[in-house]
Picture (spheres, helix red, strand yellow):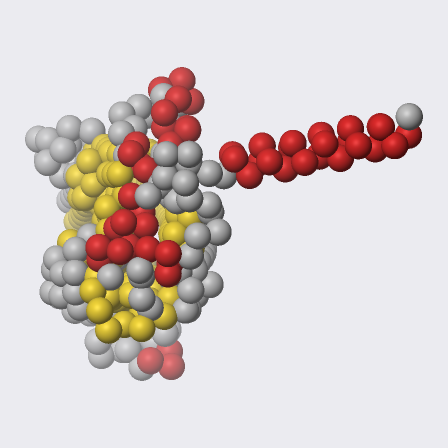
Length: 449
């Protein structure tokens, strides 16, 4: 009986193994997942055009496109039709390089997801065939002026990890509609377009984490128009992109809101109109509309305007170290319900920027704001350390404004504002004309020493 039981157990185990093996096969194509690139005639010596054999490999439905060390030259986009070929990933160990020598993206994922991020709106075919398209551990290099890196449309859970993209136009280009995008541990470097481009896209939930995004001539992380919610940018180094983070809702019905930029270093490229963070919350009519923005615990420096908030609502700026704004460390215009907390705004002394940076703090034509615990020092050539110009219902308290030319705080034609309990001092260039608080016009204001 024992030998019979043993035979039965062996038979069951073999049956499970056989069933598992079949689960990793496509009976129609008779392939196995351990199929190599050589099976499809893909060469990695960098000499020939591998577009056709790589596309054949994708279209086979093999799913896991494992690329060993080498150079893979292509001349047309590798298109992953997820509904047709099923869940697909491009996987390397950091050593493979794809050189895109034609126009368009090196890799383009195309899905059919029309729903939101709500599980009830995700159809079964998306979970079965399209979930989490993945690119990991590869380099993409542009060899054509119109080459892009990765494009995605109508995908669910696109994940890009440990990827280098350089010398293309746009590194990551998200269009039309996508949901739940994750970009982590990547390098998007020296591209003549944009690092991460949210191009008039309907996109909810994108996390950009632990990545280096720099020297992209069109911007680091850029969102134009679209219907975008829940942008999380954290722990990144984003520099030398002219517009390091630009989020512009102007001219769109739904706008971009619910944005958190935390724990990043954002700096450099101080040319005309440069900014580390620029948020424009205008609606179709150009009026202030969108917001729910948090900018916290970052280091920002060396641009024309470090933080620029325009036509926005419900914005918090707190815990940042901000220096060397060629014109402004902070500019807020045509906005409401803006809270600026404890930030330090001044100069980077080793850079010797006294002759090049003004570091102004300006609120213009804003309503209903709170400025508390702000530390401002050495605003040179500006009218004051903190300027409120044509603002209404602002409370400025507990701030320290030191050694700023002309005045500590300027209130110009403001209404119903309270300024209280601030330390305002100038020991560097004090003159008879210097004023702690300078008031020009306005009405209904209260100034408490």
